[in-house]
Length: 194
Image 1: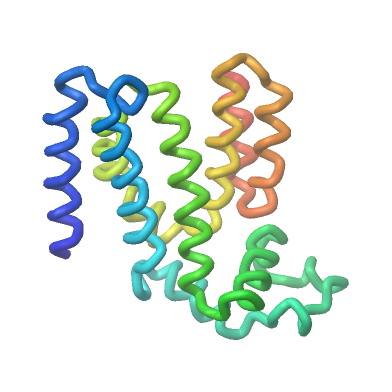
Image 2: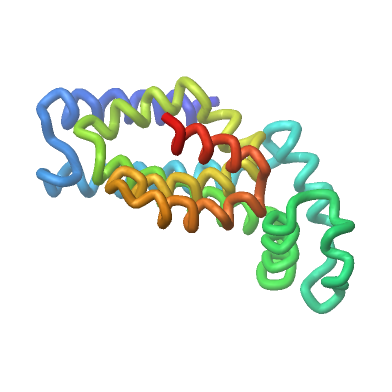
C-alpha cells in the first residue's frame, strides 16, 4: 500500500514542479527526465506486481498450464480460451522467460510506452493526465484487465496517427489489438465516429 501512497505524492510533486509552471517533456529537460522516470516506475509497479487482482491471478494460473512454443499445436490455436494474440504472447513468454512476470512486463511496457508517447506529443499537462489516470482506471488496467491493456496499447499507438488525420494508419495500428481483446474494436469505432 505504501508504494501507491509514495507514487501519489510523487505525482503531486511532478504536477506542482512542472505542470503548474508550464513545463513539459517537450520544452524542459528536467521534465523530460522525470517523465521517463515515471514511465519506468509505472512499468515496474505493473510488471512486478505479485498476484494482484482476481483476473491477474486467473491469468497466472492459466499461464502455468500454458505449453511452451515447442509443445504447442498451432492447429488448435482457435481452441485456446482467449484471443489468439493473448495466447501467443503467453506461449512466447513461457518459452523465453518461463514466468508470468514476463507477461506482466510485456503488457506494462506496451501500454506505458504508447501512453507516454501520446502524452509527450499531445498534452501540455502530462503529469496531471497521469494523475487522473491513476485515480480513474489505474488499478483495473494494471492488475485486472491485462488482455485489454495489450489491446489498448495498439489503439493508443494508432491514436498518434489519428490525431494527425491519418485514419487508415490508425486502423492498421489497431488491428493487432483486436487479437488481444475484442473491446478494441468498439473503442476504435467510437474514436472514428466521434
